[in-house]
Image (cartoon, rainbow, N blue to C red; front, side):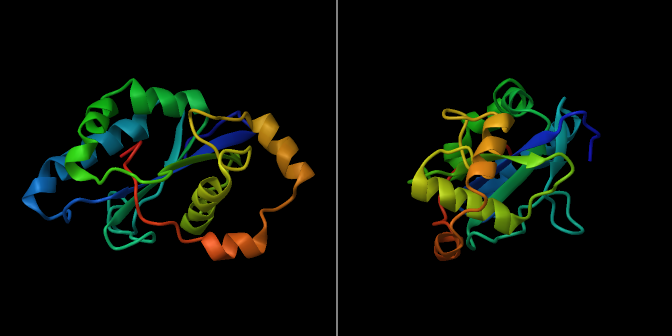
Length: 184
């Protein structure tokens, strides 16, 4: 994990429903991009952390959102750092080809939220944030690039409304598996 002077970091989860299994020849070009794109993320300015499966170089073997759904969970120092990696680096080439490998999402597939610097979000926490975004739309608790909030706005929101509605989060903690990857 990269050291940071920031009090808050930006967490992001995206989910992507595969058109074909990872070992299918039609997905081979995606699999070939994984190592270089992940290495670029690891070296990108503002990168803090990414989820990887134990003993693996990435998280593609983890399937917490469904058998054909891959997850990408990362933490960045700032929203600008994540934006720059996603849309202003070699990652953009993978984004442009996403329809070759992933189904078109029917609902939100990307969620952003602020975490205390040093906190590494769990997959369950991330899926709950995605479920919150899907159920309630963007808020300081769960948002998107298009409708974002600052860390200060999120902190004020959390002080005013301490926790998500637990009974609601329990009902919707497993999102419907759809989406495409914003960061591979």
